[in-house]
Image (cartoon, rainbow, N blue to C red; front, side, top):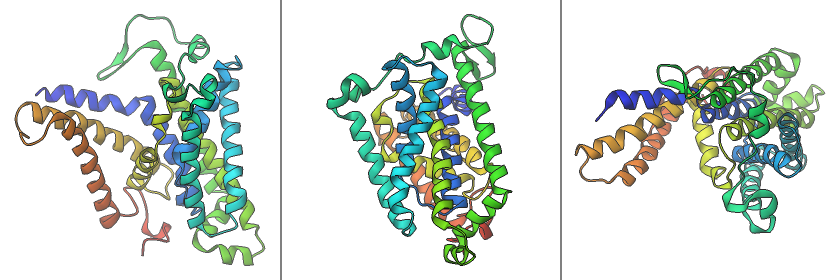
Length: 328
């Protein structure tokens, strides 16, 4: 067992587009749940809408990549309006039911063969990176460049740089919003929306605004992930939503930097276990399971870790119990 290679593969996940996409999605979810109290269980749907809006705009309509990204953001706004307008006047449980159902409906729409020329059905979409890569300002070099385990190609570095910049801007936006009067209102809604309504605030309007802004940040996570790989409907399943919830709860739901920290730790731990468990099987340390079962065991261990986290530190690593109404 090459333990150094396992550590190298694990460290490489820190800067991967998938980790960055998860960090963005968790940041948007923090605005929904951590700061506003909105139970969004359809995170994968927002990511799918953003990614497909980006890819379809380029492949079907021949638009430049930056305009495709704007259209992906616009699709997320429309999706948030469709979800929020009929449900946000009700209590949070209804939003949770609607969002998880809507995310699955979106996935099935992208999966169906009726729209294959546009969505690619089960094969997904690929080949939409050409214009984005052509805009790469980095100097030409062959092979990979970087340091330590972070060795990437020129195109990969371009995605990583864009992703880090977008993540920094998203975190800065959430920080600024939470320090503003708007942020104090949505925090009040999280604590007691009836009291905020009694003060003359339009609770529905503030909740809808939070749903839209958080949805846009989540969609950006889907777009960044798509920039680094292809778009496939089988990625945007319910389990992806729960992985992002895990990252959020790990870092701290009602925190600014917690979602980013949680996303990084989640993927680091997952990558470490995904490399370690099969290696232990191969050297005979786990003779009672196969390599396939070892990969399944990774998710079992992650689930157990999440349960322990919620029981013993529900506020997350950076969180404060006083910031969460469900923690007494």
